Amino acid sequence: MESRSSGAKPVVLVTGAAFGLGRATCDVFHERGYRVVAADIDAGLVAETAERINADGGEAVHVVTDVTDPEQVEAMVQLAGKEFGRLDAAVNNAAVPQAVSYDEPDSTFVHELAIDEWKRVIDIDLNGVFYCLRSELAFLRKQGEGGAIVNLSSGAALLALEAMVAYNAAKKAVFSLTETAALENGPYGIRVNTVVPGNMSGTKMFLEVWSDRDPKDQSVLNEHSPLKRTSKPAEIAEAIYWLCSERASYVTGVTLTADGGGSIRHVKSHVS
Ligand SMILES: NC(=O)c1ccc[n+]([C@@H]2O[C@H](COP(=O)([O-])OP(=O)(O)OC[C@H]3O[C@@H](n4cnc5c(N)ncnc54)[C@H](O)[C@@H]3O)[C@@H](O)[C@H]2O)c1
Image (cartoon, rainbow, N blue to C red; front, side, top):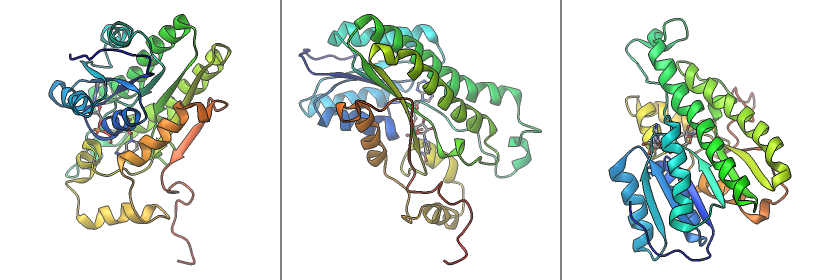
């Protein structure tokens, strides 16, 4: 873990900060003057996230955290207090997709899905978000100055994906976590919202799910959005930043869908 001197700047905590959207989110908050606590299970890459920010004149620390371990999660949140003296925003972004099998797709369908795979995905994508929310909300309530939290869901929670039942279910449950937490914590000035990305290219998850496939399949992903392209992580990070900023001071309990319009229309239009 590395640290630099703290000042009066606001502090954001981001999970899954080693790669993809998590790293892009750290960069966007840093650009807007936040100090950053970057957390991930990947020790090497999360250190790099913090090093890049520090090298750019910012203030960041990294912490190796497995979000499925409530004790590690609590230590991660306490680190914000120890290193920077406060916490203003938290982004619960860490997640994994369900393992994909193109050779034996049935093995990933509901009727054959291995119980261990179900439990693995639910533990990271649902229980992990709960553990993070639990520790972050306790910290923010004790601090007594409000705060903002964003949980990451997915377009898979709006339009179910085949061979992804555990991921779909976990991401749908994130809506419920957000709504309940927003209700319970509004009186303390703590806002809790969900961001739903659509297909976001260049991330580890995107490469893991789509890299084995025919490149033509990936052009189908572009067609899914009326904008005819996938998003970059930085575009989704901007939506997360806005929800955490004072500009969104009256926004809580909502789902901000940043999917390039992909969920507007499920089937191809009859006129195009
Ligand atoms: N990429 C997409 O197309 C897409 C689409 C919709 C939603 N999302 C959501 O956006 C978020 C970011 O996804 P991404 O594409 O940047 O993924 P990514 O795989 O690039 O990054 C996820 C990060 O989470 C970390 N992580 C995994 N398990 C962890 C654990 N147990 N504890 C702590 N960290 C752990 C990984 O090491 C990785 O750095 C996720 O919540 C994902 O579900 C992604």
